[in-house]
Amino acid sequence: MSETFELVDLEADHPAWSLALPVLRELRPHLTDELLRQVLAEATPQGLIFTAALGEGKCLGIAGWRIAANTSAIRRLYVDDLVTTADTRSQGVGSRLLAELVRRAREAGCHVLDLDSGVQRNAAHRFYLRERMDIVAHHFSMEL
Image 1: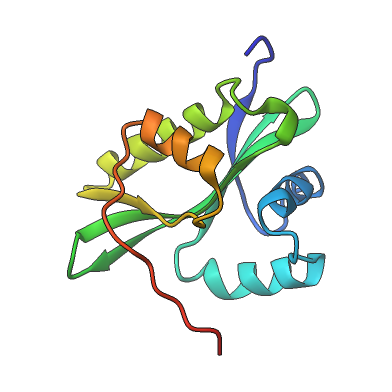
Image 2: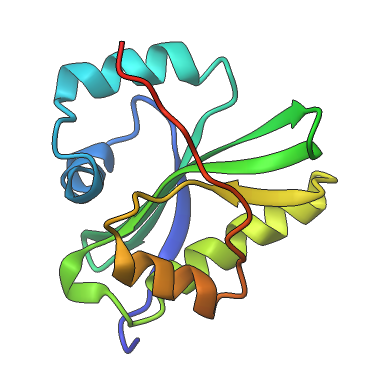
């Protein structure tokens, strides 16, 4: 990618949210300003962090992630959200975001980096497989 960008962790009150939320909405179109505030208020104390790729006054991609302990992995970095803008896909933004999460996971002593991806997201699956991730489980869900 010819454009340079930096990776920045966004606190709930970070001014770059005005740039980042529209990018996050490309993955989560239901997300309003108010819903995001609710999620940040509840999930930040649970360890949720958002890391954004910012460059030339734009947000190019964003990842929401957390470190969690569980019985299957003992300690893992779980990626809640990973999205790049439609016009920057296949330009290295997603790879750099994922590489940063891998670095942080290793630094934190995690054994695994996990994420779930909707079954319809074929382009995302090709990206994850290209990045040497494996499909290791089925995810089951029930609407409440």
